[in-house]
Every structure is written in C-alpha cells, then in structure tokens.
Image (tube, rainbow, N blue to C red; front, side, top):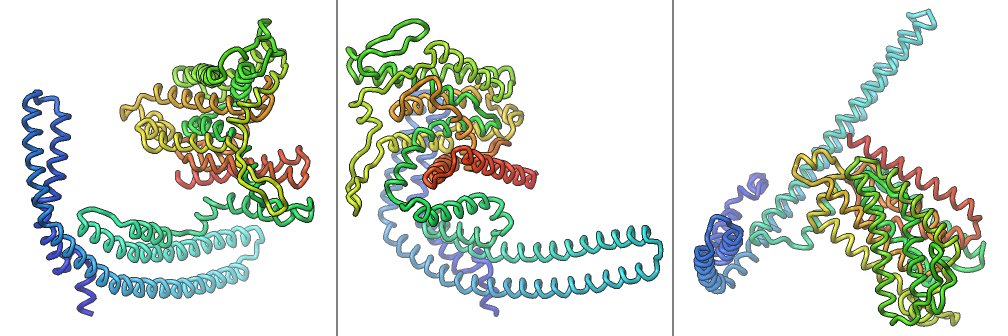
Length: 558
C-alpha cells in the first residue's frame, strides 16, 4: 500500500524527478538551446526597435550559438536516447499498476454509489407512498386532495431527480479521476520526450476521453439522425433485390452517387460559409444556371441556337478550345462572384439578412436569364471537351461483363473539399469566420473586421458556385432553368452535416457528408421506383429532424 501511495503522483516520484533532471541537464546546452536561439532569431526579425545592422549582428551571434548547441546535441544524442528509453519504460510500468488500482477503486466507488442510489430511491418511494396514503385518508374534499397529491408528486419527482443527479455527479467524478490517471501518464511521457507526443498515446488518450465522457443521451442527440439514415439505407439495400431484381450496393452505383454529388459539393461548400455566419443563400440555383449557360454558349460546337438580349447567335468554334474552356470558367466565376458580392454588400454593410439579399439576387438573375435567353436551352457542349473533363475512366468489367468506370468530376470535387477545409481550419480568415458566426459583436470588439469577413465569405461562396456551375454544364444541357431547387438541397446538406443555423458551429467534413447523404437518399428512392413527389416528403422530414436536433443542442448549450 505504501508503494501505491508513492506512485499516485508521478511528479512526486523521486525516480521520475531524477530522470527529468538528468535529461534536462543533457538537453540544456543542446536541443533546448537550439530551440531558444531559433526563437530568438524569429523575435529579432520581427523587432521594429532594432536597426538593420544590429539585427544582422545579433542573428549572426545566435546562429553561432546554434552551431555550438548542435555539436553538444550530437555528443549527447546516444546518452539522451538511452536515458529517455529507460525513463519511459519505468513510467509506463509504474503507471500501469497505478492506473489499474485507480480504476478498481473508482469502479468500486461507482458500484457503491449505484447501490446507495437504489436504496435511496426505494426509501423515497416508501416515504411518498405513505404521504399519499395519509392525504387520501385525511383529506376528504376531492379538489383539495388532488391539489395536495399533485404537490406530493412534484416533490417526489424532485427528490428522485436529486438522487439520480447526485449519483451522476459521483460517476462523473470517478470517470474524471480514472481519466486523469492516464493524462498524468501521457503528460509525464511527453515531458521525458522533451514535449514530443506519440501517435499511439494521442489516439489512446482520445479514446479514453471518449470512453469516460460518453453519455448515451448526448450520443443519440449528436448522431441519432445519422443512425436513422443509416438504417434507412440498410433497408433500401435489403429491399432492392426483391423490388427491382438488382443489387443497390454495387461499385457502379456508388460511383454514380459520387458523380451526382460532385457538382453539388461546390454549392454546399459555398453556402456552408454563409450558414456558419448564421445566414443562408437562396440564389445558388440561379448562380448555377448563370454559369452553366455561359459555359454552354462558349463550348457549344458550331453555331449557337440561343440569342442573348437579342444579340447573336454566335459561333465560338474558331477559338482554340483551351482558351474557350479558360474563358468559360473565368466568366462563370466572375459573374457568380459579382452577384454574390452584390448580395454580400447589403448583408455586410446594411445589416440586411442574407435571406432577403440573396432572395433579391435570385430574382434578378432569374429575370435576366429568362428574358435574355427566352428560356431556350443552349444545347450540348463539344463532345471532346465534355469527355475530357466530365467523362469517365474505364476501370474494368464486372463478372457480368458490364464496364466499371470512374467519373472524372469526382476529382475537382475532392480538390474543392481540401481547399475549403484548409481555408476553414488553417487560415486566420477561417478562424475569423467562426468568431463572426458565433458572435459578430464580440468579434468586432476583439478587432475582427466583420464587414471584410462577411464579404470574404460571400466572395468565396461565389467562387465555389462559379466552379460548380462550370462543371454542371458537362452533366446536362444548360438553360435558364438549370439548377432549380439546388439551393434547398445545398442548405439541407449543410444542416444534415451539422453546420448550425445558429452560427459559429460546423465543419467542412459535415457539409461534404451531408451532400453525399442527400444524393444517396435521392438515388436510393429513385432506384426503388419511389414517386418523385414522395421523395420530397422524405427530404422534408430529414430537414425538420436535422434542424430540430440542432435547436435542441443549441438550447442545451444555453
């Protein structure tokens, strides 16, 4: 028992303290000094109080110290490695014993608490049953008796709630103690490695944290919708052979779903930023039509059949194809950015809700396109460029001899996800997006330019819309009606993916998963022969469920 007490706190273990001191002494004039001098050089370069010559002199001196420190680090490398290995082995063995003892003790404590809860609940039931019986015998007036019984029932519920709450607090405390034992173990190992972490330890730490903080209610609240959708897909896969005579879950079907998701991914990535700012965008579908029509006009083989505001038709086939492709992409992006920035200006400067500003933009584009083109489809684009960008690569053949092809449009969609993820997670602009979405007033007070961030999000959305609209022309004949309802699918995909309408909460990965879920839902229902009108019912139910869960989570946080 005395040995256990000595192990309780690793920072108090004399052997661990000795290991840390010896490693620190070996590293002081080596790797630690290198880090110190490198940080010093960075600070010298940033300094505005030092002159150019003084900066250069100090940097030269610091680099000379780094050379000396590297020599010391080289001499001590083997000794440090051997001592570190020995220290880690000791800490791992000591912690294993301690963690096992802590776990056993805390689990026994939880079991005792559970037994105490059972006894307390039985006592409460007995006491309140006696009170209820007494009231029924003593109070003859029905109304007064009912009132007193309701009071007793309320007090009973409160007593039961307090009992369960006390037990939950005890369990949480025990879980925290067990988790802390492992945290101390990992922290000590990191200190012995001079701050370096281990991949296996990081994964294990994350798992233990999840294990000890797991709550069934929270888990169902966060993942209930995904579980329900997963069950729905399993049912579809099971029913498909009986209803259609073919298997739904095949590689060609999966690739088709991903191909259909590819262009819609761009629209969801664009509108996701606006939802993160607690806004929305109703103009997505019209942006898609705008970019697609422009792309179709420029890449149509031969003479177009469409006039635009009474001008034309044109024949761009004399231009080199690479130039036409670049021009189509450029114009699609520029026009979408222009209209998106137009809506963004009114939202950022005039504090107009994006619902209104984007609704106005939607109507403007819609009117211009239909008036300008008379609603006439622009026709298909050149078959060679269509195959080069929107075609498929042959992967092989199935056992039935059917070709398995890989859609090329998946590649730009993956690139778009990576770019959006990088912007959201690895840039100052991305951090500012979360800050403005969470609380724009607090963000402004902390020095963030809310106007610039809001405009930046609208412009970024326009770029994604423009790229998606350009690629949309490779999937179908473009017209002023192309993209009808896409804004609702994009918004719904983001909400299902966990991007909160309350602002400041969400991840790019969630938006991407939401797009795939919604596209898969439509594909599965179509595959099973479900009427198109009924498909809207399923989508509506999912949207209501997703927003309801989001609202419940938001209210719980408040």
